[in-house]
Length: 192
Image (tube, rainbow, N blue to C red; front, side, top):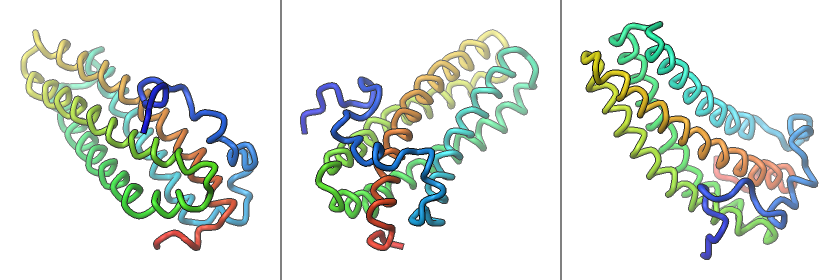
């Protein structure tokens, strides 16, 4: 598939032809729709969890850089939150790619290409997650070295901000593609 201008790192949203259903089902009305079932709410809650974890890791890193948190406390928090973030995000994307996207893609030809873009995003995010892990491990390794601590934490913080931007772009696009498909066609076709 030609991804010119559609790659996660290049786009600022899905192209208008793929936004046809979100125009019909705008975000403001999702929760009130009869097809907004517990599965959709659970799925959106997972997205919110990823956003919250990134925000918490960013805030904790800023606290470390400002000397408002002890390095050993930061290390424990980053290890716990970072591990959970990577593990849960990988699992979430795997379920989407294998179980949900193939079914949703068949529901409406007008937005089918959007699921290919989302799948491509998942592969791009894997690269960013690899950098996230490298930067997190780099920060954790220098926690006991005051001279290198700020550099390691600074690199992690900068990389986290980059990942946060790309992942948020992906999550917004995914929500605005997936939720309207489910609202229009129902969740019955999805694997449970």
